[in-house]
Image 1 (cartoon, one colour):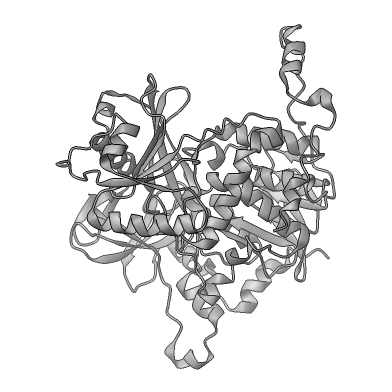
Image 2 (cartoon, chains in turn purple, orange):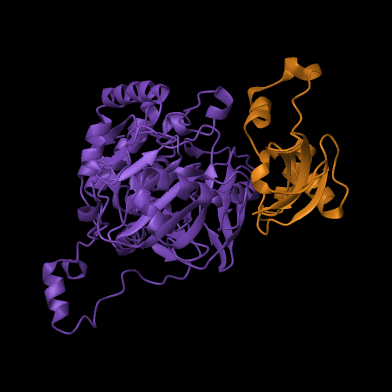
Length: 432
Length: 121
């Protein structure tokens, strides 16, 4: 990837009147905030576009934004079946980190993390990116050794990662239970200080607003029902709001990837599973970092509102129902209470499930297909949110140039034939 | 929470079972192994049917009799239409249809013909 692409700076909001700033805030305060402009238009589909992005989640909107901003392709539509960011973008635990073991993963997730660091300025929208650190715990001798190996691999890629002792962990997270006699005692952990969380809805809104400003049409409540092709070339899509002609279609639809692939007669190694999360009632600040644990299989953070946000692994069978099965949250809460006994006093407010696109090697697919002009960005499984800006950027690059850049190259669909898998199952912070 | 009727033990909670994913995936035949391409083997190893609707899948009663069987289940409603023995094909209309529409059971020409109608005149 040419780094200079990103250094060109944002072309969005060149008209200063639409920019959010302290001055626009003061101006609008004068008339009781009654005249704020719409953040994005409610577009209806045109008959022809240069490119169509299917899926109006974070990754899809980011793709459209970078296509317009960096590659100058502004005649684009983002087609969304439901409402903007109503899928997994709004159904995740917002954890962002780049401490992956393999070089290929480090490249894409670190690329994303660097983009996160300037994202609020770039989009002129506060995505509330908070680098509060992500601490991954180890609970056995074996895990400690594995952690040490992983930490050194991560550091070799220039990504920050520090090993912490139980005493240091207790100092960082006073609420944690480091009693050596619990079922899975805390023996150590590693911390990525630059990791953290962001406001997931703001990410979708920020990208949507910036893309819209560059002329991208965001079409909501519009389901894709078919892909049109002439021989081996994409010629358009069929939607519930009529047919659209286009030569380039980027599919960024997470759990529904297989449904779209089936329309194009393409096979994917994807299994759609629910990934659940729950939040408690809001309480005063007790946890200012993100804690993950592989062995007890859960992750926890505290939202800015004060809710404790908990998540765990995927459900064990394929599903397209955005709910999830009860044994998963039950296990998740039991694991959390073991580590944070005070949680047993809390009431849980909400539970939800998002349908994630799990891949055999727990790494994404960012790929061309056998059909010219049809591109897939999927397989992010349980950890796609953290990659949103990086994923959008490299996918935009792939669509614009019709060839993968060095970051996207290993993520080709062809890897399932060559055997060059990027196996992040064991290397991920939490087992997938 | 699914309640699954194990053919050997009766109704049990889903937490007693493990799901083994897509059923009826045949290993590419040894007889044609010298003609086996990476693509064929990739389809066998990695490519998966992932329908939004009726799915034929393998389940194992891990915490019970530890035996395998097949289930026809809707992935949207989670309704179970049929439970049938491993190595057999489904008997119900819904199960049979799910078995037949799978691309693995069709020739390349049959699969391609399904998509011809998408090609504009």
